[in-house]
Image 1 (cartoon, rainbow, N blue to C red):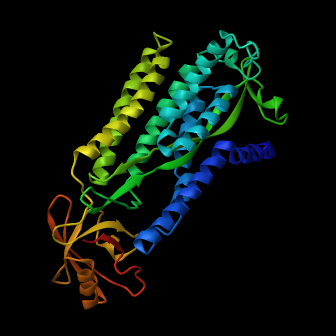
Image 2 (spheres, rainbow, N blue to C red):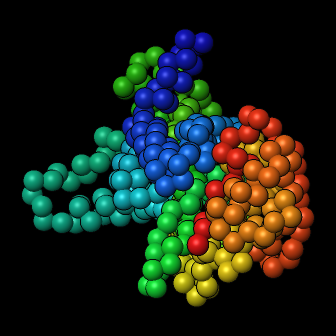
Amino acid sequence: MAANFLIALVLFFIQPTFLVGLVFAIWTSHRRINHERSNHRVAVYSSLYEIKNYLLLGILPGVIGSVLLTIVGIPVTMDWIIVYQIVTILSLIVGYRFVHPIFTVSLSTLILVGLPLVLDSSNFSFIPNNWYQPLSQSEFIRTPLFVNSFIILILLLGISIVTIKRKADTHLSARFLKTKRGKRIAKYPIKPFWVMPLLLVVPGEGFQAFFSWWPTFSIGNELYSFFWLPILIGFQFTIQSQVPKVAVSKLVNDLAVITGVAVIIAIASIWTPFAPIFGFVFLLIGGGVVLYRHRKREKNWSVLFGPAENGIKIIGIRPDTPAEKMNLVVGDTIINCNNLPIETEFDFYQALSKNSVYCHLKVRGVDGELRLTETAIYADSPHEIGVVILGK
């Protein structure tokens, strides 16, 4: 049994979705570091945090979700797992914003429900009728497959909302662009992306057809297997006109609203079994509306991360530096350093050199409020005090 468990665990790490997702996380991390070194002269976040997030963020939610689904007893089928992996990989190639379960799970289930109906009623003579039956296990599930996958989707939505709210506005890495007037401003592409190992119950002996050693268990006269599925969860949006924490909060609130509607639809499926099919269509459209509303908010507001009229704008904070200890945040404007007024990047470094062991700053926050902050500077503090600034 222990050997079977280890083999099943190894199979999780060699599944296509996990491997493709890992390649994308590595590629994104190296691309971000190269960009920061090229534009900021130093990597703001030298650690490969994208890879760490990909591998670690989903472990605890995956355990919680797996336990809940196992206790409630919500099975899916082999054909659903296969279609999900194909749809997820294709979505990832298109971009991170479409890797969210709101798109991948919805589209996978709709394809699985609709494609056999379309092809079986078509006149394609080279496609045999019931071509999908060797993989289909729908006859093993008492409730419709789309009902079970809809419940799983609601669970994944709730987990993703919590994680995006906690993590999306951390590790902000600025990109530069120019306005029509030639002014350089900063924007922040936000790409939360992680894998969640989800233990799913699969009916029948489908896996034993491929792996004779695959363990099964029985409930009554029915056989079931467990399968670890890598659920990729991603999202992508850009912030340039809002405070990051506020922008993320608004986007999360929009996601929470459509999740609430999805819960109502799930409850309605008790009386209307086909309600989840409408729910998948609603969530596909709703996910697009959430991204559209965020983009519209960004366009309607003035640019927040441009050069300051008085002082220099902070567009990045390196971790474990004096800047982090002083609670400086992206969007703050340094207007005074060591009792010297600051107008340019040269002024700032001249003021820092005035006192090599201590730093006293006067800062204007994004809300316009002034505050004073200070800290000691140690010899091993990287990149001066640890701020990335946008000068005039």
